[in-house]
Length: 201
Image 1 (cartoon, one colour):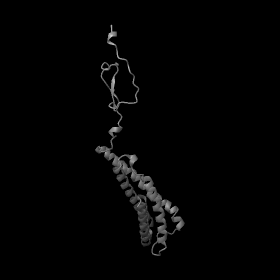
Image 2 (tube, helix red, strand yellow):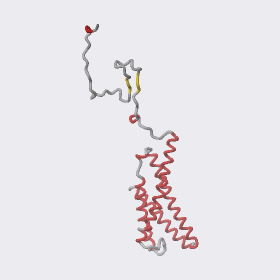
Image 3 (spheres, one colour):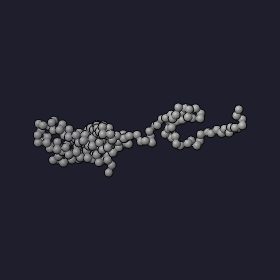
């Protein structure tokens, strides 16, 4: 099962369960309705915060390089959409049962405005803690010296002059670089005629 689907169904389940508990609690303590609503809202947000933080920590530990990590923005956006739609539809269906009072709104409201609000409750907190989790893992890796290093074959090594210029037949410095041991077979070559010893004065 896809990661976003698991998260979306899980968050929708949390949302529906606490809406059901909220309805039962308000029926029992009608004067505490405002406090109970805020409490259930906070619980749903906290679950999204915790789940997003776990995803961010696991992703950065598995992929120290940021560009190699999973696209958790898309994962949690899809999860929020699934969670909002499923939670809205399920709340409306369960409200048809007389013993349950999850919502007094119609199906259209629950899968549009209600679902949009639920998407924000899931997506925004999750992405906040994804970022925070990745940040703390990266800082821990830098502190412990386990941060990814640039591979040796990608390091740029500048040529180093060897000698003072008098050691070379041409009077120029000889350079040793990263690829000094590999001759350039395509480089142009020039042939010079051998000097005649008899022509010397």
